Image 1 (cartoon, rainbow, N blue to C red):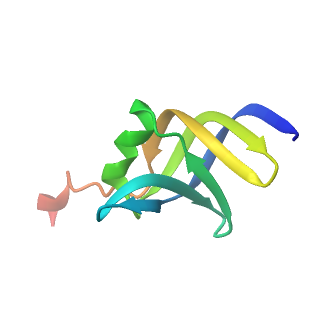
Image 2 (cartoon, rainbow, N blue to C red):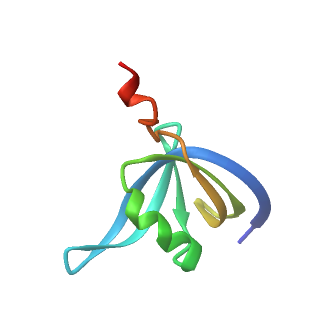
Length: 90
């Protein structure tokens, strides 16, 4: 059981990983359309429940153990946020 822990910044899409009683119970960050990083279910990770299907950059601590990758969120930034501030300037 080899475990690797490091800090990283990852860009990907937030998707549901598990469901419980018709609610999302855990999340995964899909990177490059193939690598899945399970998001830790702590206070910072649960904030991302509001951003399912959105593209984000997450800064945090990555833990690699066997074939499973996990990320503990320290900071995140929505990458698909549209800027409607100048919408009236048409």
